[in-house]
Length: 229
Ligand SMILES: N[C@@H](CCC(=O)N[C@@H](CS)C(=O)NCC(=O)O)C(=O)O
Image (cartoon, rainbow, N blue to C red; front, top):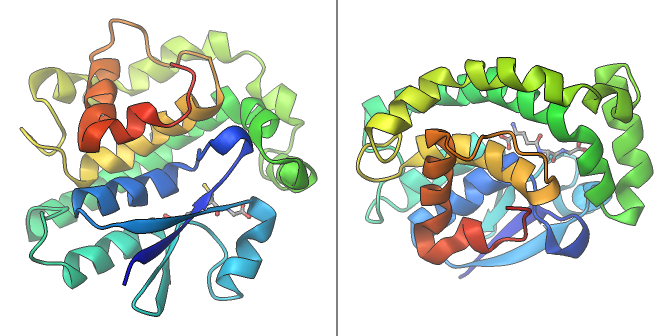
């Protein structure tokens, strides 16, 4: 039975959720077909009920699972004969660091750079919800959160130095081949690319070259998704 994949959907087929990209890449890595269910923020409750409040959500063989990490663990356990997402226990453990670093350093930097651009790309029915919920989190109007992003760029790019050093020396975080660590970080930059023309990464940044390599995986899955660059 084909897996159902509930993915966040904005305007013009833009699927911009960084967490959903983790899942989308994981499904592709495992070679699993899925039925794509583009879902507005305000439609998640109808899809997932009270138990699943965020996307990504998958439904596989009648079982509903949310949270990108849980989904990755499920896919790895359920489909052991398909290519491994983690390459074993050590890889799985190391992904927890990549997850924490991405959520603590990369996501906040990206969010502050493009949050108003996200607002511009959410579906009409999501606009009030997105603005209200995110302004509550940031304690500021979205335009004020994003303002000054050019001035913050150098510091944010410097924060990415460990990633830069790594992907300059090897093709992927997983080594010669991409694994779930790559998809975790890829999701963050794909998020930005999907809804903003603001260039977080300089043209000559090795991270951009790595991002493009990731975008070419699985027949250009990432590159072909609507985006600004
Ligand atoms: N820990 C979750 C986080 C997922 C998450 O926050 N998803 C966002 C979209 S990027 C969401 O569904 N938000 C619902 C909302 O804001 O109401 C995961 O890894 O999947």
